[in-house]
Image (tube, rainbow, N blue to C red; front, side, top):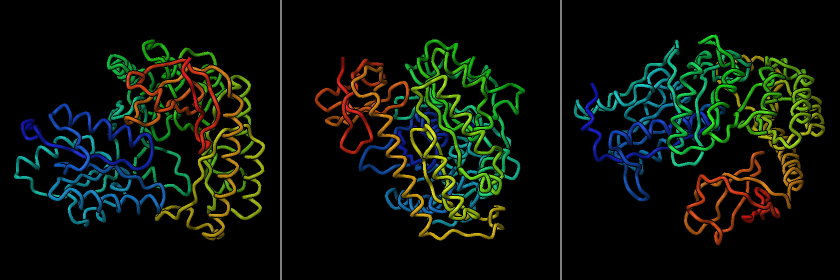
Length: 442
């Protein structure tokens, strides 16, 4: 039984590390607490509840998690500090040893956050740290929220069955599972009622949707496209072997799915892809990019690339560099390989030095900048429809075109009334940091 009175008048601070899925889940936690009378802490104010949603994709991510937990404890003395997410699942005992941590929630338990808080406060607020690692993760915690943002993030799937040699996510998130299409359509309809105009589909391996219910990702996309009040959908990271030709062709002619894809490549060397136990080769990846561009020439395509993994010899890296150079993609998300305890990649003998990882990352990031700038420059002078997002008073507003070009509206033209509005603009020159195009309202 939840004691709702225990939540009244309390304040909460939230911090999210990692992926869009984590952000979606944090936003849902915040919404649940808000409905119980908990408000988000103001700047300079101490929180009664601190929630840190963690990531463990790399060793650097682990370090950032620890630093953020210590910071939240230090800045909010006496707060009830909750740590959840992938790092909490994989290293529950380590997190529990941090002074000031009140609750560590594994992947199954995070769905019961409110009950845990209620039980703790009804027993006098004792800090009985939950440290059990969940071994059989089955729970699907639904999430469709925007937090303090404009776009909604709809969690359509969780977990992964792929077990790539470098990755611990299946251990942190469990096996692939999903809710029904009907339940997700209902959540999208509710987002529309709340005024949402754009929804991003999130998950760990969303193309694997249907394992639990016997449905399919393409049918989910078609069903969501019928929710006419939602004007835009975006598909977050989608494995190339699960990006079907039918899905590409459908998105090209759909009402609301945007010409925007994010596809993990990880390596452009077939030798390395085999060592990683990826489910495709570079030819399949190239074929998918070609098909997208054939049907949607204006599509923005982001690509994940890992550098310096075990087995990536200089020759293998050059294969990746040349392969990406020739691909018609827009942006590279580059990250260095990090040793993860318990992964089979540790048995691969060839180890890349930290120096070489940095040099390889630098080369790919420079290529990414060139590709993004070239993509943006093609649209200078054209008209576009932008969904604007709220900005701090006196600052420029930002938003995105259908094909994910980030735009900037000067502080003079920025108006809070433009938040969550689809507005016609003319695309102007690149901003000084080359991360956006300046725009003027038509």
